Amino acid sequence: MRWTHWVNFPILTVMIWSGMLIYWANDEYSLSIFGATIFNFFPDGFYTALNIPHRLAEGMAFHFLFMWIFAINGLVYVLYTLISGAWRELLPNRHSFKEAWLVLLHDLHIRKMAPPQKKYNAAQRIAYTAIIVMGFGSLITGLAIYKPVQFYYLTWLCGGYHTARIIHFILTIGYVLFFLVHVIQVILAGWNNFRSVISGFEIVNDKPKPATQSTPAKDGN
Image (tube, rainbow, N blue to C red; front, side, top):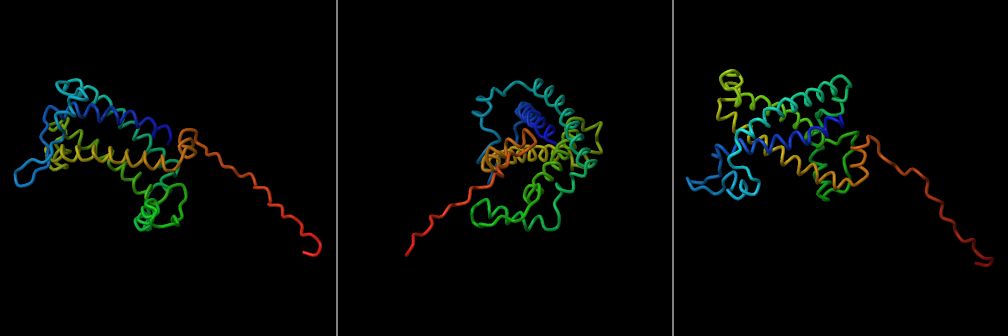
């Protein structure tokens, strides 16, 4: 699970970067109110700073190559969780959504006591399951955009080419937001937790503290 977790990081980084190279060729999404554009995805300065313009062919080559690596890595992860039984600790249960709210209040220091957890807390169960569903959605919508004629049934399932492209775009923003929250949570959890994600074990100081010695009272006191 740790291998697929760390392999996924550079894969998604290349996928998002190459996706931006592709998106530049048809930059049509924006936020508008009553016909007035408030914000474009993305401003010209963003493309200039990252040297994105005029690299469509390069972006497509990288995107479609790493798509297969992303799919294989995701398949290995899902198969392992199913075969090993790790899915029991990963999938949300009927109490997860209520407990996730308590986890959020605890993280915001509004609630002092954290809800009980095992390997993952309720918020992690929901987030990690959602990211798997998002990955599957990215593959389906990506294939629908890549080959809308050959995979016409996927394109139809996604609501058409333009809808599939919008969903694909929204999922990409979701990955970025998940990554930011994920990194913040890792930082807050501390170095020992981060080291355990890399090494597979956590160092616990279980050495008993020395008993406090009391000064014997003098006679007459």
